[in-house]
Length: 97
Length: 394
Image: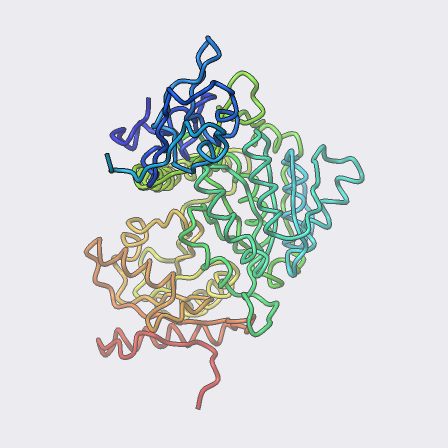
């Protein structure tokens, strides 16, 4: 696995990536300035939030239920909070409790 | 037996491309290189090549199509001049940083403005730091020979860089001279077929080309490019040696003409070398120890080798057919002089900007440079090192 400690002569030429599905390794969560909070007690599992997530920040389990946010990929766009009819997603400023 | 012909520089380049028979040619016409894609499209129509010819709407697209083709795993070529190269500029850097061994015929012409279609090196010098290998050709024969060698260098696993073959606009591109062509079969065997290790159309290995490359990686990738450029020097010489075995024609990083025992020397490129050789011969007849060094490989720049070849001369003049407009010397001058300095060679050096916009450079002009060099040797005084040759001035 290539990361920021890989020396120059161990990199691929031109930064080529020779395997598929590698976007998972590109964690973009640190771009976020506001953060969605999942209020599971208000959630009716209606299924409206996860299709609108532009990344992969709302995991859905094999049981068809959405789980808590995967903040590694959440950029804090707030689309999920906007689309939730039950107020089960609340946007908070990053770094606040 | 080689084939004796008489061809212009553009015909020579198009003929080399026909024999190479690349998978893709994408080009847009621009004077003075227009004839290269023009002749080549005739070969496509006649069925004498298997190439996919992409008639694009601009040079930016020509280079983009070459990049796409090479990334897909094909062998791609193009030709351009001056402002065509300027329009390619963005993609020129992308081609080299993605390590795609595209081969281009660059027919050197002044970059506008004001508008000029004639020969100088402002186009080539504009991309001298772009990571392309750059070979210069004195005449149609060298333009042809360099193209035949191009893919072997560019596609070498230790190199994988795009490469451009330069020749002088009009002076070479439109002058018909004798030429020795190599038989089609021999060229085919010499150039070989192209089997890239990684390519986009390989369904066994899905890959991403040109991903985001931020602070943690771009530095190392640029270093890799620089290493490839350093490796290219050796590969260029190896390919030249093999080429010599096939044709008897010898190529190095540069050509030395009567330089061994020379006291004064001129460094130049392309067709000016022909004129300079004539002057050297005339001066030698008068007992003046004049010599010449013609740079063939401009990128990678053979700094150490040139410094060594010039170490014994008393004064050297470097001729630049483009003005860097930097208030100091031309691009070739600066490379030669920095090479000499770093290698502890303290030869007195003059920079001459000449031939801009196709201004004729005659034997009389070149003679005057050697006269200046004699004066520098006699007085030990360089005077103003930043000089012009053939400029009207009161």
